[in-house]
Image (cartoon, rainbow, N blue to C red; front, side, top):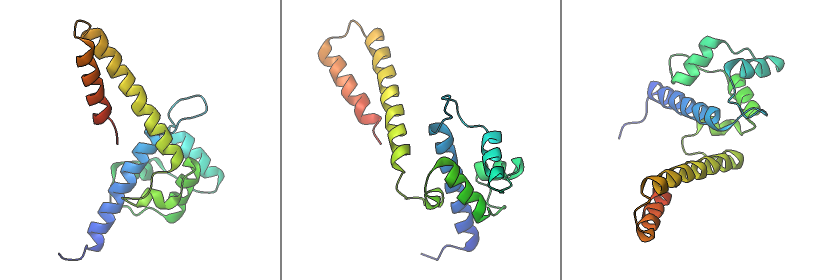
Length: 143
């Protein structure tokens, strides 16, 4: 197999960064329990002397490889989300413990909602079948 070109590597890294940012925005919340908005992140980075324009943010979130992201922006984002900067760029990097805990909590909440819906909808189904459905749901929602 041919070695990965610089353009291919840049595209892959841009897509990894976009997925990681989306994951962090889905999982990490403000102290009020709301998702972080662009202006929250922009303000926090500005306090550290790092400029983040809405255009750059769009390029980062969309995985656009035509715009190279400066190391200080990556480091600033990592500090903002309280993670290791390498996590943002590594495809197979270990998920930070705090993020993993949040993901597990979200998965448990989703399973509970699906289980509650199934119980209400399938109320005439015997308990053995409901247990089998619950087991399937647990298996399908694990990471």
